[in-house]
Length: 615
Image 1 (cartoon, one colour):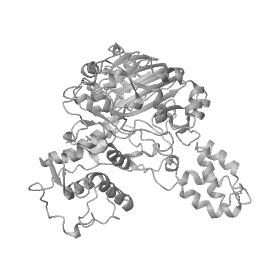
Image 2: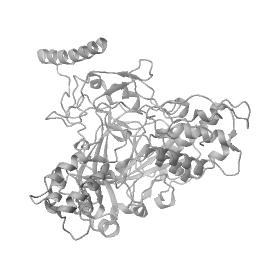
Image 3: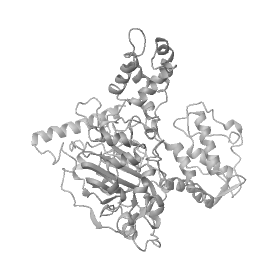
C-alpha cells in the first residue's frame, strides 16, 4: 500500500511540478489547452484518388496497408444524395426510428419521441435544426434502396465483407471524441462538409487511451478535443497526424483501429458509413475475378452481417461474425485436428462463451449453443461443418452475448434507477395523496431528462383502471409496480467506467502480420496493472475527468446502476486443451456428477463449469 501511495504522490508531483515549471519558464507546449490538432503541423492531407476506383487497387494500395484515402466523387451518384430532402425522408421513412447522440459526444444522451437516445425520423427532421441532437444510427433497412455501394467495395472479397451500414445526419456543428473503430470504414458524405484528423495506428502509443476491457477493438482517447492538456499528456505533443477535407459526394476510407476526430459543417450534414471486415486488411491476396469493370452496386443486392428493421432493437456495434467463426475454428487448431466429438465441441463452446450469474440466462445460452452449433444425429463435427454454418447461427450467438442495452427499447429503464425516479414521483403527489399526472410528466422530462413516452408508460402503470386519473388508492397500490420497471440493472460491461483511468500502448507496426483480435493472438489483449501484461504501460494517479469539475467536458454520464468501486471485468482465457487422444475418443474426467457447479453461487469472474450430466 505504501508503494502505491508513493507512486501516486510521484505522479502528482510530476504533473504539478511540470505545470509550475512551464509557468516559470513560459515554455508552454504549442497547442496546450487548445483544439486538437494545434500541437504541431499536420503531415499533410491523406491521399486523394478519383472515382471510379478499382477494388484491386483499393485493397493493394490502402486497405492492406491501413492507409486512409479520400475517393473523390465515389458517392456522387447515390440516389440518396438527391432524394433525401427533409420532406422525402418524412414521407418515405418517417415512421422508422434511429439512434441519437448529442452534437458533442461527451455531453450525454438526447431524448427523442421513441425514448432516451431514440427518435423517429419524422420527429428528428422536424426538430434537428433547433435541438442539440444528431443521428448516429444503423441505417434502417427500408432505406437501403436509395444507397449504392461504391465500386471499390462492391466486388471480390469486399462484396461479402459488409458488417454494418450506418447513417449520420445533423444540422452541422458536431464534434466527436478522438476515437477508433474495430472494423474498416468507408464514410460517404451526401450533404455538407466534414473535416477529419487521423492518427496512424503506428503512432497510437503517443495517445492516452481510456482503459477498457478490450483495447484492440474500438476505443477512445481521454484527451479533451477542445482543450488538449499537453502538460499532463506530454507524449501527445509529438504525435503526427494527417487531415482530410471531405465534400458532398466524396468517400473517405478510415482503416480499422486508426484514431480519428471528426467535425461536421453545413445546415444539413448527412453521410452513409460502410463498416467492413478488418479481416480484409490481412488477406494474403485479393481475388478480383469479378472486378473486371469498376461498377457500383445496389446495397440491396449485397448481404450485410448486421442490419436494422427501423422498428425494434438495433444491432449496432456488434462484432464481426468472421471473428467468432475464427475463434471456434481455433478450438480445432489448438487440438491439431479437423474434427472432434460432438459432445466435446458442445462442452468447449459452453465453457468458452456461456457465462452468467443468472441461472435462467445460463440455460438459455446452453440451449442456444445446442440449437445453432450442434448438429442432430452427428457424433462428430468437422471444420467444414463449422465453415458451412449459416450467418444466422453466428448472429444468434453474438446477439445473445453482446447486445448493448442502448440498442434496445428498454434502454431508458436500464439507465435510470428507482432511486432516480422515486423523488420525481414523490414531488408529484398532491396533498390528497393523488399522483398529479401533468406534474409528473413535467418533472420526469425536465428534471430527470427522460422521455415523454416512458413517462406516459409509467403513468399507465399507476392508472390501473385506465380512466385517465390516478386516484389516491392507485398511487399507493401501484407505486412499487412502477418502480419495478427500473429494477433491471445495466449490464456491467455496458457501463462506461473507464474514463478515470488511461493507458499508453506499446509501439507497434502499422500493419501487424496477424490481426490483434485474432484468436492466434490470445483473443483480445486486456489492460492490466500487471507488469507482465504485454502492450501496456499504465499511468496511475490521474483523474482524467472529474465529474465535479465545472469546466469538465469529459465523459459525464447519466445516472447509471453502477458501483463506483466495481472492478473492470476480466474474461479468463481458457487455454486448456481437451485431452482427446484420438479423434472420436473423449476424456472421462467429467463423468463425476459432483463436478457440477452450484448455479446460484456468484461466478462473476470465472467461466461457468458444468457437468456432463447437466449438459
